[in-house]
Structures are given as structure tokens and as C-alpha cells.
Length: 195
Image (tube, rainbow, N blue to C red; front, side, top):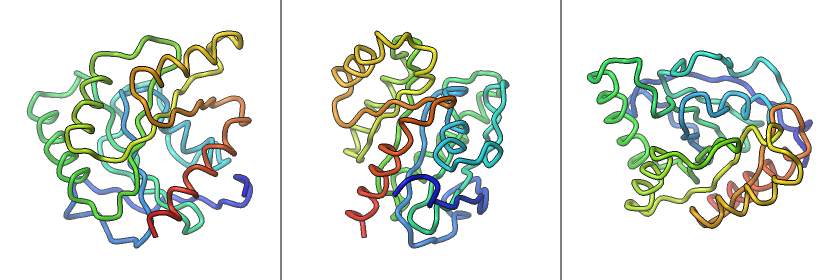
């Protein structure tokens, strides 16, 4: 099944777990640093350039935004971490709400952590991964902005993330959709296991 068969639509935003509706669909929360390309990822696999709002301003996503993909699975776009231009109080509140959502949301099938392929894995990426592993949550990794990586180095970038994080690591490019089919197949496969 390729992405042209998946109709994606934005459903609702929620600030915290108690506001999240029950969809009875496998859910994939997106976690990653601000500006790592989560919105571009949603638009890419939805084959819809304007479904999720992309912005050059980090920290734009402040809520949990839910997207339904053909009633096969939900994508939950979460606020990015590592963005300091909001008050400490606001950061702490987000953190509390997100932890509660990630630990208690029954629909979660697997987390998806995003890593910027242009750079070394950052300290807060490692911290996030350690937190996920401490709670033994299922997770896969998507390496974004792969179109900025010279073709000869893409394999090495993926291998390096695999070495650090283990598990499944997939590349993604906002400008080249050749990676989308594999990503969608993976999400559908994980969704079927969850049912």
C-alpha cells in the first residue's frame, strides 16, 4: 500500500491526556527536537504539502496534534524538545503533560523519535532516548533531512544512528518521497500487530 491510498486529515489538538479523545486506532507519537522536521514528515507521508503547518520558528507546536491516516493509524505530533524560548514554567508543564500522555495513553503503538541527519545526535536526543528506555516504551527512529546529506554518506549516517540507538532506523526526506513507502509499510505493519 503506497501513500496515495492513505487519506490523512487533521482531527484535533489537545494539551494533555485528559483532553485526548479515544480513537481506537494505533497511535504513533512523534518526538524530536524543535525544527527536526516532524511536520514535514506528516506532510510527506500524507502526500499533502499543507496538512501539518511547517515553520522556520522552532517551538511552534505547543499542543498534541492528532492526524488520522485512512482510519488505519493516528499520528500524534508533540511539542519539540530542546527549545528554550519559552518560560521554565511552560517547559515544565509541557514535560509533565507529555510524560503523562506517553506513559498512560493506551492507544500508543510505538513512539517515533526524529534525529536530524545533518548533525551528530544531540545531548537532548540521548536524554530523551534514555527516558524512553527507562520505561521500556516501544520506539523506532526516523532520520530526517536526509536530502541534505551527500548520497555517499547516507548509509553511514543511518548505520551510526543504529549503532547508538539500536532498533529500527529509517531515513526520511521532505523533498524526495522514495523513502515514504517503506515508512508507511512499517507503520501499517506495527499497527496490525497492535490490533
